[in-house]
Amino acid sequence: MIEVVAIDTPSLGNRSYVATDGSVAVVVDPQRDIDRFLAVATERDVRITHVAETHMHNDYVSGGLALARAVGGEYLVNEDDAVSFDRTPIRAGDVIASGELRLRVVHTPGHTFTHLAYVLEDPTGAVVGVFTGGSLLFGSTGRPDLLGVEHAETLARQQHASAQRLARELPGHAQVFPTHGFGSFCSATQSKADTSTITAEAKGNPVLTADEDAYVEGLLAGLGDYPAYYAHMAPSNAAGPPPVDLSPPSVADPDELRRRLDAGEWVVDLRDRRAFAAGHLGGTLNFGLGTSFATYLGWLIPWGTPLTLLAETAEQVAAAQRDLVRLGIDRPAAMATGGLEQWGDGRPSASLRRVTFADLAAEWDSDSQPDPYVLDVRRDDERAARYLPGTAHIPLHRLADRLDEVPRDRPVWVHCAIGYRASIAASLLEQAGHDVVLIDDNFRNASAASNAGEKAARRRSPSELPGS
Image (cartoon, rainbow, N blue to C red; front, side):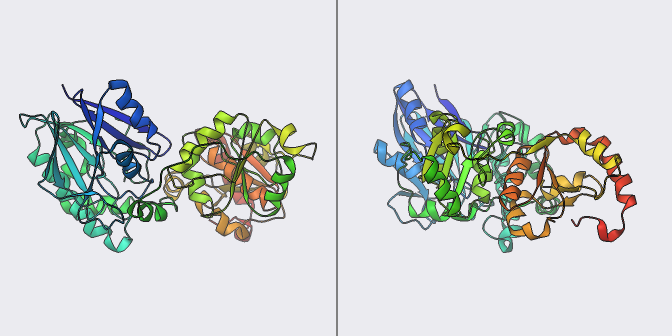
């Protein structure tokens, strides 16, 4: 019996797979921390014979090469991908056999020009499912603009044709096993589904329900920004990433932490935003450890900047390291655990005032002068859907380049959708010398603030309104 084990990476919104017949296994699109895949093989007492890539990934550093070398297996990569390492070059129409497993290779351009899908079959030729990578996702498709906007329309049209071909040639019961679509910015939109089939996608996926022109128009119109670190992923994967080193970084004492801060390095506090607001080392940045940690730190950090991690425990540092190596941020410069008492050695700490949208409404209703400068750091698409009147807008990922637009003559109240990104923004603004107030609240609670903001906006002349 063929089993497909999904291995999720929630921090990057991706999914890898181990397909096994109980004796041998094939791994598809593995993340760089390959110990997870080795553990699945060990638990099931199976031997990994092949490691397959659907495409040169743009959103994470692959563990495929390291895993294939570790197990002595074949590394399956499209023969048309320009890579700097030995691999088993494959092409459309090839059939890869291992034990009771069969992988039939299908060319599915759209997410990239050389994208492949692998149709999983049993020895009789019966289709079990298809590993679709970024071509056919749950309710969506991979975005077509990661190779440059000049290729986006061409790839979008190829994406439509590829998905239509899979739906046309595969049986309705075939399971769909995508790599993206669980939070990754590689996906055009996100899905809440956990499983799907060709039949299910044919009923509700726009790439299969809309004609080519309508699909392409809708897809291209809905694309937003994607993380800056994507620019480094495909070149790293083509060069052949080295194995990872997850051993603990060196421990920094308070003097070293201060030296690193004074040198302009990034010292990142992994605690949640409430703990950070209550007290932190001045100059540190707050990226709370969680599912969004790696995406936003990788997006914002100037590539190559030395990084020191602060956390309550060594286990939290280890979790952060694991997330970061998936982006190619391999070795933190240093670490420190405990809390302010250990990190500051008696030096004065900084803090942030935490408020709610109700507090903002009260501030606006109070007629205090000047009105607070309220900064929305959500993405453009979130802002377009709903925003507070009279607020400024700078998406978090653009804030570092636009700090000079933020006034210094009054406190800056900063908000996002739930508070996580606002805390990152608040720490960046505080580091730049601003007086910051963190709105730590869900944007669903902003109705009263919206009404108060409209009244406050009417009190001001156009020259007083914050820019957007």
